[in-house]
Length: 223
Length: 375
Image (cartoon, each protein chain N blue to C red):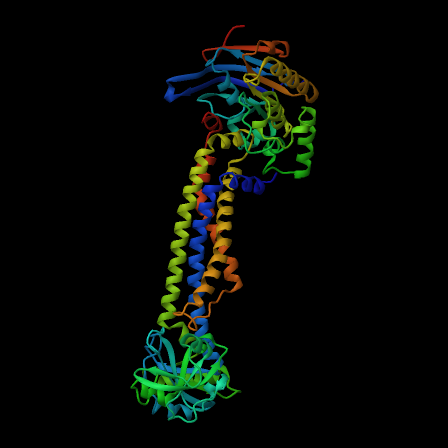
């Protein structure tokens, strides 16, 4: 394993409403290559805000983020960073309702280099791996919650990311489906050497994560 | 899935609104196509009529830009022109748009020098030509015959004179098929313009060169102040009616383009506002801002391309129908060059892209995390 962390945060701060709301307040965090980190804490403690900053979906008010030692602030193209290195899984799936499962998985490949046949083959392989081979043309509304989340995981993996960011991926699922999704993420992480950062309330995640990062009031709390 | 397929997919998701947008764009394009086709057709009809007669140069008043040039006395200019080198023939032509028979639409009435080369391109469909320059008789084009429901042996009342129809003719020029023709002498009597013509038609020798043409033009400028020798294309180009028709078609095209931009702007702004979270998802999944711009502008361009194609079809169909209206039959020969028909949908696409640009920029500037929080 490389000694350089895949992600590092220094004094990461995020304020909203002109400073009236402090989502994150000077977070320091390191995530090693291949590590499975679960961020836990009460609602509003800043877990999702931290995930958004790691995935470059938002910009910090202060502090710096590093990906394999490179500061985010010097990256010229954060969209390219997201596409090449980051896969997102959201609590509410965020699938495009008018597209079938296969097309949803292919959405991140649109406008990217490479042949569409290659993208399609990779999408089919992922959907096969995630047990959705018989749901290719199904629209999200016709799928169960577990199937939707598996489709979202396939979409997150289509561009072969290094970092999988999952925001309450089991939050909308029943316990059986939640366990299945957690198992899948763990298995895929092992198969592909992925680094996983997961925001969760799910007590079952501790069985899968290498490390728990508890948060309180926008800060990393003592374990 | 390609970006184009995704844009097509999105366009199909809001069928009612997008269909209305396509129809609005199509109406604008149809109006522009119809008016432009008519304007160009009007110009082409006159050009064709002049060309069919075999006229090389037209001598007319310098400042005359009316639908028909102002009448002037043919002599002594006509006689002088006949003496110019390389000039084979010079014949007078008088033309008016006149009411012919009560209740019928106005028609072009031409008076041509009897026995001149102007008559040669016409084909007699029925009857005969006027026997001599003083015969008070008319021949009518096939379209005019249909419009007036007249045949050989009937009579026509023109400016209070009732004249027998002695023949029906066909021409390669639509404008002549819709006209009434008589000898120049009879036209001068009928319109009370004895000795006058609108233009003098000059036929040159077959071996006349451009240098000869330019020499004749220069000589007329020098010897006949107030007159000018021009080609039929130049005459038609400075015709007021042609210029007004062209200006109207240009204005309609401009207005249609501006309205199209506003319609597409509104449609795409609504679409982007409704899809804020979806755009946030795309950005979160690694889409570049330029790809979002391409998507939104692409959707706008697809809408206007569909409107442009539909508009061209409707515009051409509409014009062909207008050509058959009694008021316009035989006066225009709608002209739709292929390049023009292909350009209109492309122009519509450009309009769509411009209209979609602000909504696209707005969408691309969304912060992914903020967009994802939108309901």
